[in-house]
Image (cartoon, rainbow, N blue to C red; front, side):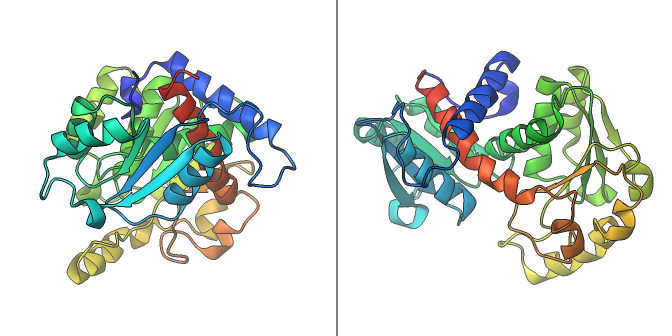
Length: 308
């Protein structure tokens, strides 16, 4: 049984195999209606539980559609319906769900919930997002980059803004796919020191550059994320905007980048805050290709978990 929890726990060979299969499945569906079931139906007669403690648009829709296209049946469950860990323990929830379904995807807050679920589950668990990581998103990002530019190995990736869960997964990916990663953001929002040190110990080229105009030089990929979480209180929102306004990805900053640099944002976006609409809709932006590829890469992840 294979769980898909974090990228640093999965071999580079397997991660590259997932991306290869995702691209093959995407190519095979070209021109088909979205509801067409794939010719190969590895989830036929399988039920997949999609558990959401956090609200979602892309994760919920892409996993639901992906399960259907693979011939399976999705079961969407909200945290409010389940009261995960509030009444029944997470361990017992894992044991029970394992008797009903063949695969579980969870989008949750604390990574401890994810790992406890995986510890007691007898079916594969997929990390749809935690406060600490977002591996499915980064797999879609790498798939998108390699569709457009070829191998990401040896390329320069620059992250602007908050050292958050998406950046953490970029750090994990940098070690597996051998690209360099530069963080450009305020010191107060640096990524975890233990995580960055662990990455450096594994040979990851990780840099911090507080000057966005210096950081963007020679970048092959620029990425950012929303500055404000839906769960932040008003004071945090005000402070966060003040801390991050110098790191907005705008047309002036983009003018200092390579002409063929790609711009990514995992969405949802607060337009004209972390990035301007001009950048998001500009010629370098691949944000909607990136969003589409969540579907294809997650289908490949489900197949990998079930060895299909």
